[in-house]
Image (spheres, rainbow, N blue to C red):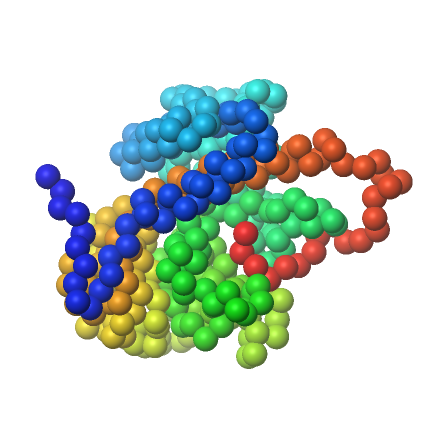
Length: 336
């Protein structure tokens, strides 16, 4: 039997379910506007146990909150054709593929097959480009918001819930003054997360197995988007003592964040499927989020709802002669 996390005199333990409830209220309000149940189709083509758990959680959360969900288990050799069929099916509103499948560049290829108008994970090239370039909208009128990858966006929403964001500051500067270490620089979560945090004004140290990179928008936040520079010779010994927020997502059950390097009162968030922080983290951290899965799934539904809204807006767009002049994409400094 699992034991619920408990607070200590030094640390507030914040559970993902608590944060997810607030986001679900926002999703429920959006569903009222479209007055139907959007259909999400999931594809499971691997034996990865974490992928299956994620798929099961997705279905449960969908059905409990007014969405339709269909899970298709297909051989990986047939997955490409199955995705294309879902792209062409007008009844399908959104598509999610549970990775890893091949565990190599073939997975990246499959991410680009999903139609951008149905990509709830935000992994299509257009969305990834917008995220790294700090472009928030898809249209000149700034009505259709770009989609962000689910897990990095879930971490952003958690930081907002914890009031790490300073809402007095303008969008894009709301993490100004914060130093954050992200342990893991995967292309799926770690690197996008470092970019999003830096685009919101933080100084971010992205730590991977071999090196540390610093993500910032430059001195005084003068740049519209982040830049990344190498920190030769740096390790966690250099960046953890500087960081008031530490976010870790190292796969596997052996890795633990070295607690002796943590700054007293740091906020600690774990996005790995395993616990990257030992229980003693509560003796040093001010706030600790041990898992983020429930928030990630609600963000997935939020992305699906946004895709449906974007499509509805496209169908109601004015004729070409009536459209205002302007750039196709506009840089904006805020996470979605």
